[in-house]
Image 1 (cartoon, one colour):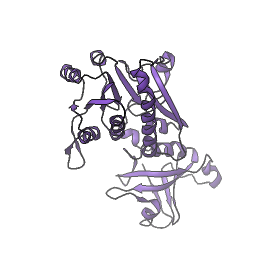
Image 2 (cartoon, helix red, strand yellow):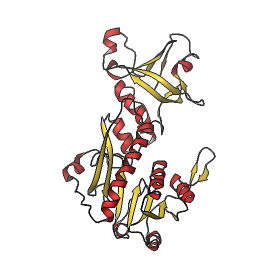
Image 3 (cartoon, helix red, strand yellow):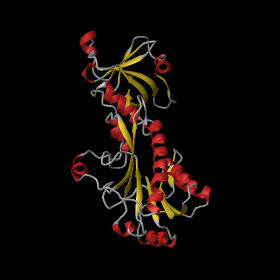
Amino acid sequence: MKIVFAGTPLNAAQTLRALANSPFEVVGVLTRPDAPIGRKRILTPSPVAEMAAELGIRTIKANRVDNLVRAEIETLGADLGVIVAYGALLDQAALEVLPKGWLNLHYSLLPHWRGAAPVQRALMAGDRETGVTLFQLDRGMDTGPVHLQIPTVVEPGETTGSLLPRLTELGISGLSELLPRIAAELANPTPQDPILLATLPTADKLNREDARVDWNSSALEIENLVRALNPEPMAWTTLDEETFRILEVRALGATDWQSLTGDSAEAGTASVTKERVLVTCGSGTLLELKVVQPAGKKPMSSIDWGRGIAADKKVKYV
């Protein structure tokens, strides 16, 4: 069975490498065009494009599958398409360009968290379980019939940066199990529940405001946000009208610290001592800052940052 692979980010590139080392032939790669990266905005190939070049696989770079791209895909002679975070929806004509259609690897247990940011949204919601889904692509947003799912527990303190590699390996394992069944025409996908598809929240793409800390939320909710947005785009707040990134935190339980201590500090007020930095959050809960990044500086421990502030001083994040 010949495969055309579509994807863009690093986890997709790792999956491409695994497919290239499988019994199946990857005859072509579809990825997004080179994009400006970093402060100098240097035009850079996607991780998938770089992997395809390393493997010597023919590459098509396009933001969408239009008539010209479809014609080029047809010349590859592939039987099946495998998609991992390509970053664009396929129309009906594109879906029908390959005999066995397109198989999509998605990093959630569908129909939960359909959309562009399933790992981050699951962590933001405090989910205790997630996983990967391999499904047959249709015109909807992650609505096609499911071939295979592999669940996994979200470990305490796990971030997107640590969870995504685990999900990538689970996805590769799922492909190694499923692709032989598809090649032998033994696959029998199951339709997703239409009621759940219509009612469950979607994993919408994150924007800058999604990453801003709302100090009126509980400490646990903020901890979930920080874990979800590490390493990208990073949770942030402002201090003295400058961006202040928050990389690692710990919620101090569900105790109403305000009622115990009598401290009625506003949400977002940080108490800085030699031992730690604590921030008052919604419902009187407390959040301990562990790793932070003040404007114009590299990430550092909150204790190191606090050394530059007068002892027992309180600062206010907004």
